[in-house]
Image (cartoon, rainbow, N blue to C red; front, top):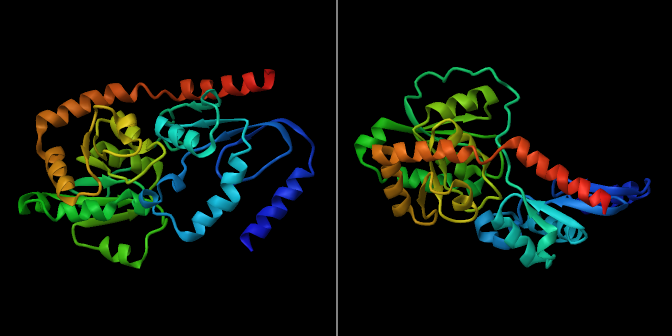
Length: 296
């Protein structure tokens, strides 16, 4: 039923007038009659199904509805070299037709900071926790391997709207050292970054990882996985772990929480590294590609 509706939507749109350039900002597989198409490819989960943990329904959607449209792109923009490699491997595009433009730090829509909820104490922050690939269960298992002193001192704070977690995950997230804030406003998110002991970004896979930038920008230490695009974006400004090894997560978690010299180094490097991801510069690079494609 879904694919039939998608086909009808495409047919309806293709009856409209012809465009010089169509820009596809997402992965929904919408097509227009256009001389050229510039596609923004955020990620390609089918290149690593184990890491992305996508459902069978989503696999079918990607194979039947998304990838065939992406193959028609004249040029593509992506947001990490990691994703660029997946694009080249999947579609065989010429290298000069696939452009990496890093995201810049966004301006928050909501500038007013909200106070911390009461009784949070010292905490580890997880952003977008309701996606399985964020590996929150790995963090929880590692946390339980820490000393009783550290377990008593810290809590894990989860944020994020519902995504693909199941009933077992929800039960797992209900332990007494976990505070589940669900979706939070921009104002509260900024406050959480600024007060967290560290940000957990131990994902199995990402296309970019904007929360790492947001954390670095306010001096929050990042504990990230050593796979996918995380090392590319975080550089030498964070602490890394093997997301598939609970013992290693626990070791690096303890270091990131307690090694003050390392923490100060990460904070200093993170503040400098965040400056490399300029929003206006990122937008200007997008505009330059659009203007060139219109002029060719």
